[in-house]
Length: 212
Image 1 (cartoon, one colour):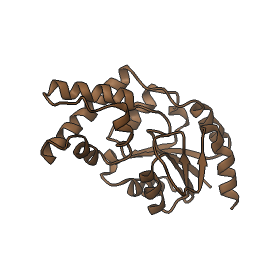
Image 2 (cartoon, rainbow, N blue to C red):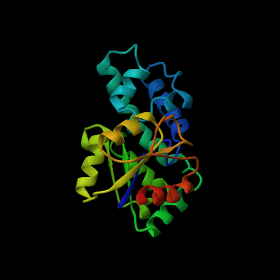
Image 3 (cartoon, helix red, strand yellow):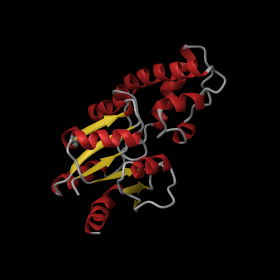
Image 4 (cartoon, rainbow, N blue to C red):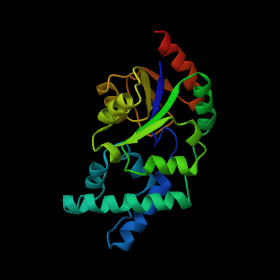
């Protein structure tokens, strides 16, 4: 195995509370009722493509307006996260150091907007340990396609994807990779290839998957 590819939200950190605050403020400034945008609501939305999140969150708006409002909220969210960033899950920094010692590339693939992974790297200690990243805002395609593009670009022939939602699972399988469920995150996955309940369980899981 050459690489471990990570999801972001629900896998590396939980930004839902911070994003909810930012999005409610974006709505307020534009005269849209955003009181329903809560941490709990966003936990059920994260992992989808951004247009789909917007349509789900703003069903009373015309589709084009919902998507446009979501794009604005995403831009303003990045500024907010630089000012008041979420914390990484406990054990994530140590995990990336351990994976580097194992000789594995560590990469990130997210369905987020352009600039989101860059924000994560700006406000946390992970930047020196992330070899490559790609997000839907860069590729304009779904997560499976984004995974494939990153692997081709980095000449990665074998990898495992770590994510927390069923959408992560289906995308990983469509990309042809084994999937490790981050069960400490947002979603349920019935039949992953492996499951972890704390980030630091991952190295042992990877060793077992690599030996199969």
